Image 1 (tube, one colour):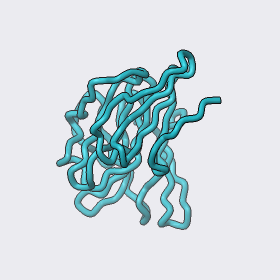
Image 2 (cartoon, rainbow, N blue to C red):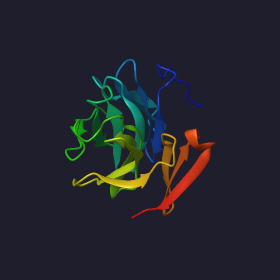
Image 3 (cartoon, helix red, strand yellow):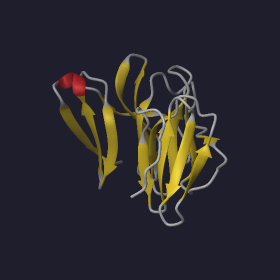
Image 4 (tube, rainbow, N blue to C red):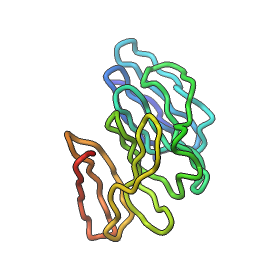
Length: 168
């Protein structure tokens, strides 16, 4: 059993085959623990407001920055300090209230409200144009995940509706 102080209780966490990763929204870090080598440290620092961490097994993705000027960042899912890359196709102009991120290795998905339309948006991980994948039924989507061939999320504002869509 590994015990570590992860910082802010609002931190998000994900796991890849080689490490456990988490964010600290207050400290602005993305950190790791490698259960094989028993090492831990930061993948990245200076990620103010880092949250919604996810992995597709190859890359980590997270949102950093305040609403309206947040960016989607990525780094290799390797337990060591990394060079962080802003996903070029998803920039401050693409996000308005981005939250909860997921990836299937081909596409990146996130919940957002764009020009008054709340829902799940997507962009190819390799770059491309933002597309509305599924409009909200009334609540702001949360707890987005990819499982099998489905994209699944929860809409708490619609009496606890669990929604799913086939991956493209």
